[in-house]
Structure formats: structure tokens, C-alpha cells
Image 1 (cartoon, rainbow, N blue to C red):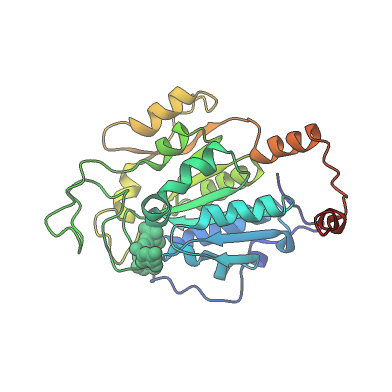
Image 2: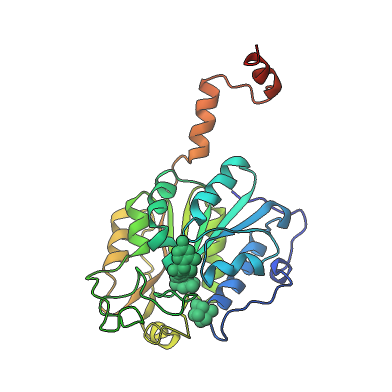
Length: 291
Ligand SMILES: Cc1ncc(C[n+]2csc(CCOP(=O)(O)OP(=O)(O)O)c2C)c(N)n1
Ligand code: SF4
Ligand SMILES: [Mg+2]
């Protein structure tokens, strides 16, 4: 659900006056531009939109957008975004972060945000490395990946697949795109924002400074769109495409899209059942406990 403006804004109207501090060529510039396109396409009202992030290069995003912003703690973007949405459901809440923020320190929050179907959009900038702290191995790095903390190659036998992770916990919108494809990225983020429920947009956003393996050139070779006949209402097919793309390839597109009640829907239903008077005077309740 989107909080729309009465008059349409242009993508650049969503840009703050703060100049991004990302390295020249960083994939996150492309994401910044895709997000502005999506906000404009959804006619988001600046006053009614909150950009929330954790910590990392990617998590600097709220500074560079004109919406309300909250740069929280490392790994805590989803609980804070959840709190904002529950406190004021009329706000459009967009969460931003990196692969480390989301799937290392913040990994325990993902299943609960997903299973509760919190109606927020999660834009994850996946560069397969910790960029801000100068190039350590991340949960989406591949096995054997050489970094400053894994000089003989990552001993981890497997890596986190953000798409499969969110699909298995009941994600209702799961997509992947590439920071070098602004058209597809803008369209997918816009669909994710319009989606009723939790949405994940995993964006392959290369770190040009510390990751010399998962580069733009590499991804330009291996990225391929999901087959035209992919049925995005078929969970098993979505999981299969997320886990078993053709050898050496990485799929982009909308893997899965469905609708089920959000936590807000269920809370509203409980309030109705319990006969909650939404206009009740809080002071009257407090007074009851005074004597
Ligand atoms: C509690 C805590 N632990 C560790 C850190 C150090 N730290 C800051 S960002 C970061 C990882 C960033 O990686 P990622 O989320 O992938 O973002 P990127 O910089 O790659 O965009 C770490 C370990 C911190 N700020 N707070
Ligand atoms: S260190 Fe990497 S992720 Fe961070 S701004 Fe530079 S290129 Fe981007
Ligand atoms: Mg990262």
C-alpha cells in the first residue's frame, strides 16, 4: 500500500542535498537512482515516507534521500522499521541495508519480519562483502572467497541465498535485480512498494573497492532474466529458480508474489473481536488505576 502525493514528483525530487560518499563506481549509486525512480513512479509523499537503515556503506542511503530517515544500529534495520510501521501504519516504510547487516548480525530478525508479513519494503544491496569495514567475508560470499579475514579462502562450505531464505519463511514478494539495470530495478522496487505485505528486493550492487571477484563485468556476463514463462505465483518454482539457476548464471526478476494477511490485518481483526474503542481516552484508563 502506498502513501501517495497529490501532485507527482520527479525522481530527482526525492534526492536530498547530501552528496553520497560512496567510492566512485560503487553499485549503490545505481540503487540510489533506481529508488528515486521507484518513489516517483509510486508517487510517494516525501512527508509520509520513512527510509530506515542499519550500518554499512549501503546503509547510508537514508542520508541521500529527501524522505524522513533513520540510520539505526548494525543489523537492526528490520525491528526498527517494524516498530515505525506498527506505530503509524499510514507511513510508507522502506528498509535499506547490506548483506552483512541483513544476514550476519541482523539475520535473526529476517525470519520474524517475513513470517509476520510486516508491510514494509526491504531493499538489500548485496555486494558479497563487508564494504564499510574494508573488505571482510560476508554470509553471501562464496566458499573459498579470499578477503582480509579469510586470506586462505573462506572455509564456509556454503553461503546464504537471500531469495531462498525469505521464500522459505513465507515471503510474499521476492525479487532480485542488478544495480546496472536502472529500468528493471526501478520497476521492481515500485512493484515491491505497491505490494501489500513484506517485500524483499535483493540488488546485486558490486563493491568496486574491496571485491575484485564479484565485479560489474562478471555480473554482466552471468545475469539473465527469469524465463518468460516463469509463474511467479508458484512457490516451488520460485525456490527452484532461486536455488538452481542454470550453471554459472544468476537470475533477476520477480521470483514470487502472493497475498496473505499482514500482521496489521490480524491485529485489526483482534481489536475488532475484543471490541477495542479506538477513540478511547487514555487518561480515563490511567485514572482507573489511580485509586
Ligand atoms: C554491533 C556492531 N558490530 C560490528 C560493526 C562493524 N560493522 C559496521 S558495517 C559492518 C558490515 C557492513 O557490511 P554490509 O552490511 O554488507 O554493508 P556494505 O558496507 O557492504 O554495504 C560491520 C561489521 C558495527 N558497526 N556494529
Ligand atoms: S567500499 Fe565498496 S561498498 Fe563501500 S562505498 Fe566503496 S565501493 Fe561501495
Ligand atoms: Mg555488503
